[in-house]
Structure formats: C-alpha cells, structure tokens
Image (cartoon, rainbow, N blue to C red; front, side, top):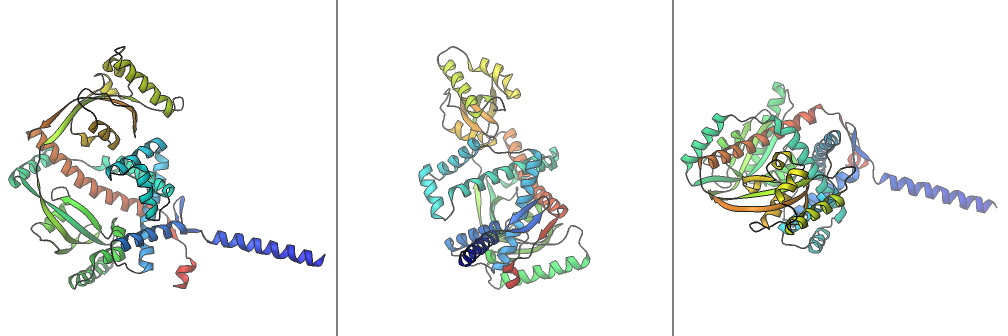
Length: 433
C-alpha cells in the first residue's frame, strides 16, 4: 500500500513537473499596453530572419542584437493590432484566401505549389496565413490613421510637374539601404551627441568595408532594420525630401550621411540606381455592383445574389445599370448605373484590379470578394492614355503622396510607440547570456 502511495505521489510530481516544463516553453516576454508578446513569437521572428540570411548567404549580428530588433518590430506590430481592434478592422477568411491566391498567382504557382514552397521554408501554412492576415490588418490601420495626416497643396503639384518636365523622359530611381540611429522625441544635447557619436562610428565601419545589412540589423532604429535596412526601389521624387537631396548625383555603392532629422541620424547606401522611362498608361472604364455581407447576409448569400444578377443580365432579363442603381452598396457609382469612369487600374484594391485584368471589353466576370465586399464587374472599355497635363498632375500627386505617406507613417509609429506602456521582462536566456 505504501509502495502504491509512493508511486502515485511520484507520478503526480512528474506530471506537475511535465506541465511546468510545458508552460515554461512559452511565456510572456514583453507587456505592450493592453497586450503581450510571447517568447515563442520572438523566437519565431528571429528564426525567420536567420533562415532568410542563410538563403541569401548573409552574415548576421549576435543573437542578442537580433532579439532586440525582433522585440522592437513585434512591439510596433502589437500596437497596430491593438489599434485595429479598437477600430473594428477585420479581415475575413474569404478575403484572406483571395489575397493569398493572388500572391500565389503573382509567383506563377498553383495553390498546391505555393503551399509546398511555404512548407519548404519551414513555415506551417496556417502560420503563414495568419501572418498575411496581420499584414493586411496593419495596412488598413496605417491607411486609416496616416492618410488624414497627408496634406498636398496645388503649388506642390505644380512645382513637381515642372520638375518632371525638366527631367525629361528619364527619372532616377534608387535602391536604398537605410540605417537610423534614433534619439528620443524630445532629445537632450547629451542624447543628440550620443546618437551622433554612434552614427559616426557606424559610418566609419561602413567605409572600412563592413557589411551594411549586418550593421543595419544590429544597430538601426528604422522600421526596416530586420530586413537589413532595405527600402527597395524608390523614385527620386517619391522618397523623403531629406533623402532625395542627399543621394542626388550619388553613384552605386556610395555611403551617404549621417543626415540629421527629427527622428535621429540617417545613413544611406545607394545599393543600385537606374533610369525609368515614362511609359503610357492603360486606363479602364468599368461598372460594378457591390454587395456587402452583414449579420443578416452571409458571404455565401452575397455571392449567390450576384451570381443571380449575372444570369439575369446575360439572359436579357435585366440590365447591369438598373441592377446597380437598385442594389449596389457603392453610392458613388450606383447612381451612375455602377459606372466608375476612366481610371488607372492601379488605384483599385488588388482583388478588383486582378479581376479587371482578366476581362475583355463588355465581358462580365464572375463574382469575387475584395476588402469592400462582393463585386460583380463588367469591363466597358480599355484605352491607352496619352501624356496629358492631367496625367502629369496625377502622377505628381501620387509621387508626393507616397513620399509624405512614408514620412508620416514613420512619425505616427514613433508617436504611438512613445505613448505606449512597454515593459520587457527578463528571461532566463537573457540572464544567462
């Protein structure tokens, strides 16, 4: 009997230890306002960066530096997720599936091939799927909060149109690397001096041949730090003014900086540059009927409703215009029989643009889902736009908007980060390293 009690006691103790071990595998690493970041999230992001670096034969800084950058990225993402919840921004499963299908199609892969490619990278497809959902939500949050901070005057547009005319057919595009040595929102002279000293040391390392990507991951406070500071290709007129002035006339592989701004000291690398030819743009004129799912109208019912409308139009029982006026949830186009007018297809959300690209003149496509709801679309006509004054103004506006949106996004993220309560909890790995 005593032996049985001992066995039960040992079994219970081992069971508790097993549970404790399981719990210890994942715990809260950072408190972010009303949310938390788990240790597993940090490990997953660090692992992803390491896999990417291995694929690209890229050296990385220490694990401690990687962890610090991973935490900063996850903090920013977490704050935006909390903002999305407050704003009620959600991405439905059908919308998510459509986005992922579009990504696969853009890579010329079937969904099965795409799933296999994701698995080959060591990422469970469901994890990848939820990462895309988070990215879509983040984009919506940024658009909603930053767009209203962007103000463009007619004079700015006029000045850029003149500049584009002066530049002629060739406009410079730069592939930039970026390192930001940041300081607090209201820095003291000591803060500024310390950041400047760090920036000078970074610049010295770069000029002596150190790897830009590795140093960016280790040292940069910029939003692209974990991507090695890669800003991608940017038109000279769409990048921040501070950067445009600094890289003008600079050659490939040149290092520029430190350049001071309100955020800190910036160091840039011209990774590559090219001239882009101004080409004529194809415009489309289309009409659509929008049905928005709701509590009383499911996604499936909304789709079926549009399928019935399509059948009625094709059978001659109703016209597209009449159905749009009566049923479309897009008030701006509904009063015009669903017609959207001549537009560059790039202004539409990806799902809408993709659907239009597959249609011939007068063709009515199958119902599809976008972030706005379910659409039935007819392509009225296509045309190649000439270089009219209106086109130049539109292009100038978009370039200025892109530049200001980028600048305001960075400012908005810094403000949100500075206003948040953030506590990084010590971990055993940190205490032991």
